[in-house]
Each structure stands twice: as structure tokens, then as C-alpha cells.
Amino acid sequence: MKVDVLIVGAGGAGLYAALSAAEEAKGMEIAVLTKVYPTRSHTGAAQGGVNAALANVDPTDSEELHTFDTVKGSDYLADQKAVKYMCFEAPRIIREMEHMGVPFSRLNNGKIAQRPFGGASKDRTCYSADKMGHVMLHTLYEQCIKHDIKFLNEWFMLNLVHDGERLQGVTAINIATGDIQFIHAKAVILATGGHSRIYWGYTSNALGCTGDGTAAALRAGLPLKDMEFLQFHPTGLRKSAILVSEAARGEGGHLLNNKGERFMSKYAPEKMELGPRDLVSRSIMTEIREGRGFKDEEGREYVHLDLTHLGEEKIKSRLPQIRELTIDFEGIDPIKEPIPIKPTAHYAMGGIHTNVRCETPIAGIYAAGEAQCVSVHGANRLGGNSLLDIVVFGHVAGKEAVRYAEGTDFAKGGVSKLEEDVKFIQELFDRKSKETLGDLRDELGEIMFRHFGVFKNEKEMQEGYEKLKNLIERAHKNLAVEDKSKVFNTDLQSLLEFYNLLEIADVLAYASLERKESRGTFYRDDYPKRDDKNFLYHSMITKSSDGSFKYEKGEVDLSIYEPAERKY
Image (tube, rainbow, N blue to C red):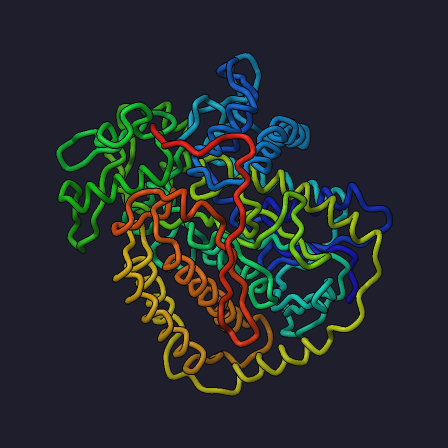
């Protein structure tokens, strides 16, 4: 199979890249390869909104303020020119989506409604009740159908193939048939989403958020950037860790401890519940650690998110999905009772290193969305900036990939990688399991949450890394594909996804041990202060052919704002 531009992943970044590429291309074949049907992509789970300085609510808002809030929220690790580009593109791209048919909630004057979100100095989060990601994803998919873009639905990418300088193609499994194929491509865009499923059982992410593109990039020798920075969202449901959107606090929800106190007054006296996510998550965990949380019959610890004072009408009109999820998964109606919540692993700031044109060091390989680290989020992402990031840089990646593909031919070679992958898959079928995949996935989640969670320290991380290395060894020795069928073999897919998670967890743990400071969402009890003198850099990790990691330091772009202490 030959494709001029192949997009891997069909969430917001992938679909926007496809639309952008189709608009730019002249007679070129654009295809989207995705392991799930496009409207099942994780973008659909995003609830709260997308940021843009439209100034519809507060006329004093501006792109400059949006840029500053984002850089400050990142704890000064974001690359500032990239942030500025994203924030100045935001109003245009919101209007573009409005013209596509995205049904934004409206003000009484007919303009797009905007609500306050954490870490923002103005009300700039555009929304559609609490289902922003859902309506964006469906609208973008409709546009792709309109433009007759080719979809390879239910295909699973295995590996990137390149000659050391430029892309040759990818290997992938057709899940419906079990056939493994080499797809020749001039350019590929990795838009495979995040990897918070390394915190199995402690994450808001869907089952498919297994960092497939990020792991493939690592195996292909591409650098991963800032992998130690993974955000814990403050409000996940107590039992399931499913997300309760920041919109709940943006609409006026209160966080309460077991004394009924709005405890955020101690940690962020000005912003209160709308402090940045890293600060709010640490504050919740501090309340729990110091005995001011609640504990249920099964030993789960949590605090309360109280919406009862908002009233029935506001909750039903502004937060309908949150109410539905809380009733379904907690048996609690937030109109009548507070919601039991705890921090949940939510978003990866780190990912595949790219420049602002979404280019990786290998010609023809691009990345966009949560899989990418162009570094607009630095050490901590602001709510509402993720949906913005995926569409802004999805748009960039699509155009840049087409421009590259127009000026090049298909690279020769690469088919030998197909033979390696066929052999590897067959070995998984031939051997016998000595342990179960489900047990090892749960073990991974426990290791990561207990040793690389909201609070970290050297002793805990070293112990966790030893456990992780042991788990990786056992997983590659003791796991096999139980279902021997080739057709729609979800057992095989789950095992391959787990191997991807293990590779990513390995990098995250390694990078975490190297950073001896606290910055943004990365907090160490033994190094509680930010250390700009020694650690104001991007961690860059590549994997050598012998499996060892190479650690390098990347320069942070500080061309607009000098680092300062964050106060909220």
C-alpha cells in the first residue's frame, strides 16, 4: 500500500491534520489510520472547553494575556514563541470551527460563551455545555467525510520505518483480518494521543490511551521530550477516576475537606478552586495526607466537590454530563450531594520532540496533539489549552506534511522491518503464558501511582524503578497471546498496547530520577523548590540500539518572559 501522507490517529489532532492536508494537497492521497472508529477517539471525552482570547465576556482579554497565563502556568518551561503562536492562532481557529458547525454555547447577545478556567486571568474558555470534545470530534469527522478523506479504521500501527535520514513508511496490522502490512508513505503524522494509561486504574484516560505513537517514535530512535511531566487532574471520581471537568469549578463548585472548609484558601487565596491543576492536585493530596480528607468503607481517600449551591437549573444546563457520570459511577446526584473526588492521572505534557512546524529530526515524520511535545504546556498544562493545542498544531502538521511530500519521492527500502514484525508477532502466538495480562497491567498502575504519583522522592522512585524493571522483564518473558485467531484479535492488540505502556513508563521513571527539583506538576518532597539554575531545561531522551537511554538537555525558549515565582 502507498499513501502520500499517512495520519496515525483520528482524534482532534489527527482529523484536523487530515482536513488541513486535504485542503493543501493537489492530487495527493491522504489517509488516516486509526485503531478505533474515529468518533471513539479520546478527544470525545474532553468536557470543559477550548481557550481563545475572543474577549466576548471580558473585553480586556488579549492574545498577550493568554500567552502570559500559559507560560506562567507552565512554570516557565514552555517554549514561549510556540506558546505565542498557539495563543495568537486561537481566535482564528475557533472561528474556523464555528464555520464548520461546532455548536458552541452562546451568550444572550449571540456571541460564543466563555467561562473561567484554572490559571487563567480572564474568562476565555469557549464551551458547549460540558461536552466540548464530543461536539468538536463529531464535527471534524463530518468534515472529513465531506472531503472524502480515506480512513483505515481499526488498523494498529506497529513501527515507524526510516533510513536514518527520512521516512520510508510504517508497519501496521489490519485488526479485522490480522494481516500485517508495510505502508509506504512520503510523510507520516503521529497523532496517537497521550499515555496516562501507565497509571492503570488511576487515570481519567480511556483504555486506548496507550501512547502507541510515542513508543514507536522511541523505538525508531526519535527523542522524547519532558517525559517526567504528567499532569494529575484534581477532580476524578473516587471509585473510577473518571474525569469531573474543571468546568464544575469554573461554574462555581467548591472543594471541601472533612471539616467543611474551602481549603484552597490556604493554597491559592486569590484563585481558590481555579488555581492551576498542579497546585490544586497537590492541595487535595495534602489535605488527605494530613487527615482532613474522607475515607470510605473500602479505604479510598477523597475530598468533596460541592455543586449543590449552584442549583438544579444551572447544573442541568451547564454540567449535564458531569451529573450523568456522577449518578452512573458514584450513585450520587450532585444537585443534592457533594461529589467524592481525588486527583487522577490525566495528561502528558511530554511526548515526541518537534519544532513549531511539527517536524521531528527525521524528515517526513511529524507529530501533533498530546503525542507531540512542541512544548506549549511546559511543566503544567492549563485547562482549555489541550483542545486548542490539538487543533492548532494538527492544522500545522497537515500543511507541513503535504508541503514536504510534494517535494519528495517515496523512499526505497524498509520492507525488511515488516519481516521482523511478522516474526515478533508469531513468537507471541507460539509461546505460552505464565502470567496474566490483566494482573500485570494492574501491577503497572500500582507501581506508577505509588512511586511516581502526585508526590515523589528519591527513595520511593528508586524502589518503584526496580519494581518496574522486574515487571518489564516478566512481561516480555511470561506473557503470550491466548487467543490464537487472526481475526479481530483484541488479545494481541491489548498485549502490544501493554508493551508500549511499559516502554513509556520506563522513560518516565528514568527522566523523573534525573530531575532533582520541583516544577509544575512534577513535585519532589526531597527537592521541594524550583531550581532554575540547574534544571531550567527540556529533558531529551533517545533509546540506543542496545536498549540504553541517552539523556540530553534541550534549551528552553525564554525570549518573551523572564522566569518568576508563580503566585495564585
